[in-house]
Length: 403
Image (cartoon, rainbow, N blue to C red; front, side):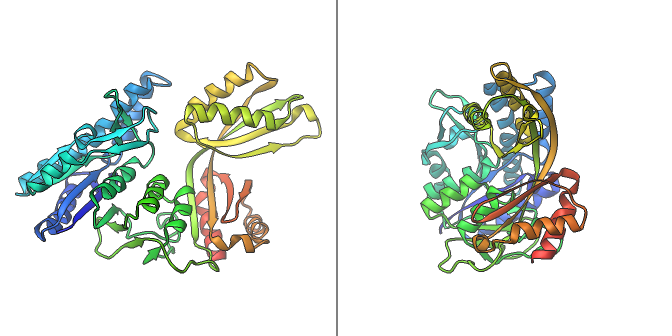
Protein backbone atom coordinates (compact mmCIF):
# COMPACT_ATOMS: atom_id res chain seq x y z
CA UNK A 1 0.00 0.00 0.00
CA UNK A 2 1.02 3.63 -0.47
CA UNK A 3 2.52 5.97 2.10
CA UNK A 4 0.19 8.54 3.67
CA UNK A 5 1.61 11.55 5.50
CA UNK A 6 -0.76 13.02 8.07
CA UNK A 7 -0.03 16.32 9.78
CA UNK A 8 -1.93 17.31 12.93
CA UNK A 9 -1.90 20.88 14.24
CA UNK A 10 -1.94 22.05 17.82
CA UNK A 11 -5.73 22.21 18.18
CA UNK A 12 -5.94 18.55 17.08
CA UNK A 13 -3.56 17.57 19.89
CA UNK A 14 -4.82 19.88 22.62
CA UNK A 15 -5.66 17.27 25.28
CA UNK A 16 -6.14 13.54 25.93
CA UNK A 17 -9.55 13.49 24.23
CA UNK A 18 -8.10 15.08 21.09
CA UNK A 19 -5.21 12.64 21.09
CA UNK A 20 -7.70 9.79 21.24
CA UNK A 21 -9.54 11.14 18.18
CA UNK A 22 -6.23 11.47 16.32
CA UNK A 23 -5.17 7.93 17.20
CA UNK A 24 -8.49 6.60 15.84
CA UNK A 25 -7.95 8.43 12.52
CA UNK A 26 -4.48 6.93 12.24
CA UNK A 27 -5.74 3.45 13.16
CA UNK A 28 -8.29 3.37 10.33
CA UNK A 29 -5.69 3.92 7.59
CA UNK A 30 -3.05 1.79 9.32
CA UNK A 31 -5.40 -1.19 9.57
CA UNK A 32 -6.34 -0.77 5.90
CA UNK A 33 -2.69 -1.47 5.07
CA UNK A 34 -1.23 1.99 4.46
CA UNK A 35 2.22 3.01 5.67
CA UNK A 36 1.65 5.99 7.94
CA UNK A 37 3.97 8.90 8.73
CA UNK A 38 2.51 11.42 11.15
CA UNK A 39 3.90 14.95 11.62
CA UNK A 40 2.82 16.76 14.78
CA UNK A 41 2.84 20.34 15.98
CA UNK A 42 3.04 21.43 19.60
CA UNK A 43 -0.10 21.00 21.67
CA UNK A 44 -2.35 24.06 21.56
CA UNK A 45 -0.99 26.86 23.75
CA UNK A 46 2.28 25.11 24.60
CA UNK A 47 4.54 27.11 22.28
CA UNK A 48 3.00 30.38 23.50
CA UNK A 49 3.61 29.29 27.08
CA UNK A 50 7.28 28.59 26.36
CA UNK A 51 7.67 31.90 24.52
CA UNK A 52 6.22 33.84 27.45
CA UNK A 53 8.50 32.00 29.85
CA UNK A 54 11.60 32.66 27.76
CA UNK A 55 10.80 36.34 27.33
CA UNK A 56 10.20 36.73 31.05
CA UNK A 57 13.89 35.81 31.42
CA UNK A 58 15.27 37.72 28.42
CA UNK A 59 13.77 40.42 26.20
CA UNK A 60 15.50 38.92 23.18
CA UNK A 61 16.49 35.32 24.05
CA UNK A 62 19.61 33.74 22.61
CA UNK A 63 18.49 32.28 19.28
CA UNK A 64 20.15 28.89 19.69
CA UNK A 65 18.60 28.30 23.11
CA UNK A 66 15.26 29.72 21.96
CA UNK A 67 15.03 27.16 19.15
CA UNK A 68 16.11 24.37 21.48
CA UNK A 69 13.35 25.36 23.88
CA UNK A 70 10.53 25.69 21.35
CA UNK A 71 11.39 22.44 19.57
CA UNK A 72 10.77 20.53 22.78
CA UNK A 73 7.01 21.14 22.46
CA UNK A 74 6.75 19.19 19.18
CA UNK A 75 8.92 16.42 20.57
CA UNK A 76 6.54 16.10 23.52
CA UNK A 77 3.54 15.84 21.16
CA UNK A 78 5.26 13.12 19.13
CA UNK A 79 6.13 11.05 22.20
CA UNK A 80 2.67 11.41 23.77
CA UNK A 81 0.89 10.33 20.59
CA UNK A 82 3.25 7.38 20.17
CA UNK A 83 2.64 6.28 23.76
CA UNK A 84 -1.10 6.31 23.12
CA UNK A 85 -0.85 4.41 19.82
CA UNK A 86 1.29 1.70 21.42
CA UNK A 87 -1.17 1.44 24.32
CA UNK A 88 -3.93 0.85 21.75
CA UNK A 89 -2.01 -1.94 20.07
CA UNK A 90 -0.61 0.00 17.09
CA UNK A 91 3.20 -0.17 16.75
CA UNK A 92 4.56 3.37 16.74
CA UNK A 93 7.81 5.24 17.19
CA UNK A 94 8.45 8.95 17.75
CA UNK A 95 11.38 10.58 15.97
CA UNK A 96 13.12 13.88 16.52
CA UNK A 97 14.29 15.95 13.55
CA UNK A 98 17.78 14.45 13.91
CA UNK A 99 16.41 10.91 13.89
CA UNK A 100 14.25 11.79 10.88
CA UNK A 101 17.26 12.97 8.89
CA UNK A 102 16.02 16.52 8.35
CA UNK A 103 19.00 18.78 7.60
CA UNK A 104 18.55 22.57 7.65
CA UNK A 105 20.65 25.65 7.22
CA UNK A 106 21.77 27.54 10.33
CA UNK A 107 19.19 30.37 10.28
CA UNK A 108 17.74 29.92 13.77
CA UNK A 109 13.98 30.55 14.08
CA UNK A 110 13.47 30.66 10.30
CA UNK A 111 15.63 27.81 8.97
CA UNK A 112 15.13 26.18 5.57
CA UNK A 113 15.30 22.44 4.92
CA UNK A 114 18.31 21.58 2.76
CA UNK A 115 17.90 17.81 2.49
CA UNK A 116 16.22 14.78 4.06
CA UNK A 117 17.64 11.30 4.60
CA UNK A 118 14.58 9.06 4.99
CA UNK A 119 16.44 5.80 5.64
CA UNK A 120 15.61 5.76 9.35
CA UNK A 121 11.94 6.47 8.64
CA UNK A 122 11.83 3.76 5.96
CA UNK A 123 13.37 1.23 8.34
CA UNK A 124 10.52 1.74 10.79
CA UNK A 125 7.87 1.71 8.04
CA UNK A 126 9.25 -1.61 6.82
CA UNK A 127 8.67 -2.92 10.35
CA UNK A 128 5.01 -1.78 10.03
CA UNK A 129 5.34 0.97 12.58
CA UNK A 130 3.52 4.29 12.52
CA UNK A 131 6.31 6.89 12.43
CA UNK A 132 5.49 10.05 14.40
CA UNK A 133 7.82 12.92 13.52
CA UNK A 134 8.28 16.10 15.54
CA UNK A 135 7.49 18.90 13.09
CA UNK A 136 8.71 22.50 12.89
CA UNK A 137 12.41 21.67 13.22
CA UNK A 138 15.58 20.31 11.71
CA UNK A 139 19.25 19.91 12.54
CA UNK A 140 22.12 21.96 11.12
CA UNK A 141 25.33 20.46 9.76
CA UNK A 142 26.97 21.28 13.08
CA UNK A 143 24.28 19.36 14.99
CA UNK A 144 22.25 22.32 16.31
CA UNK A 145 18.45 22.31 16.46
CA UNK A 146 16.93 24.98 14.21
CA UNK A 147 13.21 25.71 13.90
CA UNK A 148 11.49 26.38 10.58
CA UNK A 149 9.44 29.44 11.47
CA UNK A 150 5.70 29.99 11.62
CA UNK A 151 3.74 27.00 10.32
CA UNK A 152 6.96 25.00 10.05
CA UNK A 153 5.23 21.68 10.71
CA UNK A 154 3.48 22.10 7.33
CA UNK A 155 6.89 22.28 5.70
CA UNK A 156 8.03 19.15 7.55
CA UNK A 157 4.95 17.28 6.32
CA UNK A 158 5.13 18.28 2.65
CA UNK A 159 8.90 17.70 2.38
CA UNK A 160 8.53 14.22 3.87
CA UNK A 161 5.64 13.60 1.48
CA UNK A 162 7.83 14.56 -1.45
CA UNK A 163 10.79 12.49 -0.30
CA UNK A 164 8.67 9.42 0.48
CA UNK A 165 6.57 9.77 -2.71
CA UNK A 166 3.45 9.76 -0.54
CA UNK A 167 0.05 9.17 -2.10
CA UNK A 168 -1.26 12.25 -0.32
CA UNK A 169 -0.22 14.76 2.32
CA UNK A 170 -3.23 15.21 4.61
CA UNK A 171 -3.36 18.33 6.77
CA UNK A 172 -5.76 17.94 9.70
CA UNK A 173 -7.14 21.07 11.38
CA UNK A 174 -10.11 22.16 13.47
CA UNK A 175 -12.11 23.24 10.38
CA UNK A 176 -13.60 21.17 7.56
CA UNK A 177 -11.24 22.40 4.83
CA UNK A 178 -10.29 25.61 3.05
CA UNK A 179 -12.99 28.28 3.29
CA UNK A 180 -13.66 31.50 1.41
CA UNK A 181 -12.86 33.23 4.73
CA UNK A 182 -11.94 32.14 8.23
CA UNK A 183 -15.22 30.61 9.50
CA UNK A 184 -14.27 31.53 13.06
CA UNK A 185 -14.42 35.19 11.97
CA UNK A 186 -16.92 35.06 9.09
CA UNK A 187 -19.53 32.37 9.93
CA UNK A 188 -21.17 32.49 6.48
CA UNK A 189 -17.94 31.53 4.67
CA UNK A 190 -18.16 28.51 2.35
CA UNK A 191 -15.96 25.41 2.31
CA UNK A 192 -14.28 24.77 -1.04
CA UNK A 193 -14.22 21.27 -2.55
CA UNK A 194 -11.05 22.07 -4.49
CA UNK A 195 -8.69 25.01 -4.85
CA UNK A 196 -5.69 25.61 -7.09
CA UNK A 197 -2.20 25.80 -5.62
CA UNK A 198 -1.72 29.35 -6.91
CA UNK A 199 -4.93 30.53 -5.28
CA UNK A 200 -4.08 28.74 -2.04
CA UNK A 201 -0.65 30.36 -2.03
CA UNK A 202 -2.30 33.79 -2.35
CA UNK A 203 -4.60 33.11 0.59
CA UNK A 204 -1.78 31.66 2.72
CA UNK A 205 0.49 34.64 2.12
CA UNK A 206 -2.25 36.94 3.40
CA UNK A 207 -3.14 35.18 6.60
CA UNK A 208 -5.19 32.09 5.79
CA UNK A 209 -4.02 29.78 8.57
CA UNK A 210 -4.67 26.45 6.87
CA UNK A 211 -1.26 26.11 5.17
CA UNK A 212 2.18 27.71 5.32
CA UNK A 213 3.05 29.52 2.08
CA UNK A 214 6.56 28.03 1.77
CA UNK A 215 5.06 24.56 2.12
CA UNK A 216 2.71 25.32 -0.76
CA UNK A 217 5.67 26.49 -2.84
CA UNK A 218 7.32 23.11 -2.23
CA UNK A 219 4.14 21.28 -3.27
CA UNK A 220 4.07 23.30 -6.49
CA UNK A 221 7.67 22.39 -7.35
CA UNK A 222 7.50 18.72 -6.33
CA UNK A 223 3.95 17.76 -7.35
CA UNK A 224 2.79 16.88 -3.82
CA UNK A 225 -0.95 16.24 -3.51
CA UNK A 226 -2.50 18.05 -0.53
CA UNK A 227 -5.80 17.60 1.24
CA UNK A 228 -7.07 19.69 4.15
CA UNK A 229 -9.50 17.89 6.48
CA UNK A 230 -11.12 18.29 9.88
CA UNK A 231 -9.86 16.19 12.77
CA UNK A 232 -13.23 16.38 14.46
CA UNK A 233 -15.76 15.99 11.63
CA UNK A 234 -16.14 13.58 8.74
CA UNK A 235 -15.86 14.75 5.17
CA UNK A 236 -13.56 14.80 2.16
CA UNK A 237 -12.15 18.22 3.00
CA UNK A 238 -10.51 20.39 0.34
CA UNK A 239 -8.15 19.10 -2.31
CA UNK A 240 -5.32 21.54 -3.11
CA UNK A 241 -3.90 20.84 -6.55
CA UNK A 242 -3.03 22.53 -9.86
CA UNK A 243 -6.20 23.39 -11.74
CA UNK A 244 -6.54 23.47 -15.52
CA UNK A 245 -9.23 26.12 -15.32
CA UNK A 246 -8.62 29.13 -13.12
CA UNK A 247 -11.30 31.17 -11.43
CA UNK A 248 -10.12 34.26 -13.29
CA UNK A 249 -13.52 35.93 -13.24
CA UNK A 250 -14.22 35.39 -9.56
CA UNK A 251 -13.06 36.80 -6.26
CA UNK A 252 -11.52 33.95 -4.31
CA UNK A 253 -12.00 34.90 -0.68
CA UNK A 254 -11.20 37.13 2.26
CA UNK A 255 -8.02 36.52 4.26
CA UNK A 256 -7.52 37.93 7.76
CA UNK A 257 -4.40 38.66 9.78
CA UNK A 258 -4.68 39.72 13.41
CA UNK A 259 -1.05 39.40 14.53
CA UNK A 260 0.55 42.58 13.19
CA UNK A 261 1.76 45.78 14.81
CA UNK A 262 2.17 49.10 13.06
CA UNK A 263 5.40 50.92 13.89
CA UNK A 264 5.56 54.65 13.17
CA UNK A 265 8.72 56.70 12.70
CA UNK A 266 8.28 60.40 13.33
CA UNK A 267 10.16 63.54 12.40
CA UNK A 268 12.02 62.50 9.29
CA UNK A 269 14.11 65.61 8.79
CA UNK A 270 15.81 66.13 5.44
CA UNK A 271 16.29 62.48 4.52
CA UNK A 272 14.56 60.96 1.53
CA UNK A 273 12.16 58.43 2.99
CA UNK A 274 13.15 55.94 0.27
CA UNK A 275 16.65 55.88 1.81
CA UNK A 276 15.13 55.10 5.18
CA UNK A 277 12.96 52.37 3.66
CA UNK A 278 16.00 50.77 2.03
CA UNK A 279 17.91 50.86 5.32
CA UNK A 280 14.99 49.23 7.15
CA UNK A 281 14.66 46.55 4.48
CA UNK A 282 18.36 45.74 4.71
CA UNK A 283 18.43 45.57 8.52
CA UNK A 284 15.15 43.63 8.78
CA UNK A 285 16.16 41.14 6.08
CA UNK A 286 19.45 40.47 7.86
CA UNK A 287 17.57 39.90 11.14
CA UNK A 288 14.87 37.70 9.57
CA UNK A 289 12.08 40.19 10.38
CA UNK A 290 9.09 40.11 8.01
CA UNK A 291 7.66 43.56 7.20
CA UNK A 292 4.93 45.01 5.04
CA UNK A 293 2.86 48.02 4.09
CA UNK A 294 5.35 50.86 4.04
CA UNK A 295 3.56 54.19 3.87
CA UNK A 296 4.51 57.83 4.23
CA UNK A 297 2.70 60.17 6.56
CA UNK A 298 2.64 63.71 5.21
CA UNK A 299 2.38 66.96 7.13
CA UNK A 300 2.07 70.64 6.26
CA UNK A 301 5.37 70.97 8.09
CA UNK A 302 7.94 68.96 6.15
CA UNK A 303 10.06 68.29 9.24
CA UNK A 304 7.10 66.50 10.84
CA UNK A 305 6.72 63.96 8.03
CA UNK A 306 6.87 60.32 9.06
CA UNK A 307 6.87 56.74 7.93
CA UNK A 308 5.04 53.67 9.12
CA UNK A 309 5.25 49.95 8.44
CA UNK A 310 3.84 46.72 9.87
CA UNK A 311 5.61 43.71 11.37
CA UNK A 312 4.44 40.51 13.01
CA UNK A 313 3.70 40.93 16.70
CA UNK A 314 6.32 38.38 17.73
CA UNK A 315 9.00 40.45 15.93
CA UNK A 316 8.13 43.81 17.52
CA UNK A 317 10.82 43.88 20.20
CA UNK A 318 13.60 42.94 17.77
CA UNK A 319 12.22 45.38 15.17
CA UNK A 320 12.28 48.21 17.72
CA UNK A 321 15.88 47.38 18.61
CA UNK A 322 16.90 47.56 14.93
CA UNK A 323 14.96 50.79 14.37
CA UNK A 324 16.51 52.42 17.44
CA UNK A 325 19.95 51.54 16.11
CA UNK A 326 19.01 53.35 12.91
CA UNK A 327 17.66 56.32 14.84
CA UNK A 328 21.09 56.81 16.36
CA UNK A 329 22.64 57.00 12.88
CA UNK A 330 20.02 59.02 11.00
CA UNK A 331 17.95 62.16 11.55
CA UNK A 332 14.85 60.41 12.85
CA UNK A 333 13.38 61.58 16.13
CA UNK A 334 11.82 58.40 17.47
CA UNK A 335 9.53 55.46 17.07
CA UNK A 336 6.39 57.41 17.83
CA UNK A 337 3.97 54.51 18.30
CA UNK A 338 3.41 50.76 18.14
CA UNK A 339 -0.25 50.06 17.38
CA UNK A 340 -1.86 46.59 17.19
CA UNK A 341 -3.52 46.28 13.77
CA UNK A 342 -5.38 43.74 11.69
CA UNK A 343 -5.31 43.25 7.93
CA UNK A 344 -8.21 42.15 5.77
CA UNK A 345 -7.34 41.17 2.21
CA UNK A 346 -9.75 40.54 -0.65
CA UNK A 347 -8.07 37.97 -2.90
CA UNK A 348 -8.64 36.94 -6.50
CA UNK A 349 -6.83 36.94 -9.83
CA UNK A 350 -9.65 39.05 -11.28
CA UNK A 351 -8.74 42.07 -9.13
CA UNK A 352 -6.55 43.53 -11.85
CA UNK A 353 -9.68 44.07 -13.94
CA UNK A 354 -11.74 45.54 -11.08
CA UNK A 355 -10.23 49.01 -11.14
CA UNK A 356 -12.81 50.52 -8.77
CA UNK A 357 -12.74 47.72 -6.17
CA UNK A 358 -10.39 49.47 -3.72
CA UNK A 359 -12.48 52.65 -3.78
CA UNK A 360 -15.62 50.54 -3.38
CA UNK A 361 -14.16 48.78 -0.33
CA UNK A 362 -13.19 52.09 1.27
CA UNK A 363 -16.66 53.50 0.61
CA UNK A 364 -18.27 50.48 2.30
CA UNK A 365 -15.98 50.83 5.33
CA UNK A 366 -16.73 54.54 5.51
CA UNK A 367 -20.49 53.90 5.40
CA UNK A 368 -20.12 51.76 8.54
CA UNK A 369 -17.82 54.28 10.27
CA UNK A 370 -14.87 51.91 10.04
CA UNK A 371 -11.58 53.80 10.01
CA UNK A 372 -9.07 52.36 7.53
CA UNK A 373 -5.48 53.04 8.56
CA UNK A 374 -3.79 52.02 5.31
CA UNK A 375 -4.49 50.40 1.94
CA UNK A 376 -2.15 48.41 -0.28
CA UNK A 377 -2.79 46.40 -3.42
CA UNK A 378 -1.37 44.13 -6.09
CA UNK A 379 -2.78 42.42 -9.18
CA UNK A 380 -4.37 39.69 -7.05
CA UNK A 381 -5.29 41.32 -3.74
CA UNK A 382 -6.38 44.50 -1.97
CA UNK A 383 -5.48 44.84 1.70
CA UNK A 384 -6.88 47.26 4.25
CA UNK A 385 -5.31 47.78 7.66
CA UNK A 386 -7.62 48.59 10.60
CA UNK A 387 -7.49 48.74 14.37
CA UNK A 388 -7.34 45.17 15.62
CA UNK A 389 -10.62 45.35 17.52
CA UNK A 390 -12.37 46.10 14.21
CA UNK A 391 -11.19 42.92 12.48
CA UNK A 392 -14.35 40.84 12.80
CA UNK A 393 -16.75 43.65 11.91
CA UNK A 394 -14.71 44.79 8.91
CA UNK A 395 -14.20 41.26 7.56
CA UNK A 396 -17.90 40.42 7.80
CA UNK A 397 -19.01 43.68 6.20
CA UNK A 398 -16.61 43.31 3.26
CA UNK A 399 -17.47 39.62 2.82
CA UNK A 400 -21.23 40.34 2.78
CA UNK A 401 -20.74 43.18 0.32
CA UNK A 402 -18.45 41.32 -2.09
CA UNK A 403 -19.61 37.70 -1.89
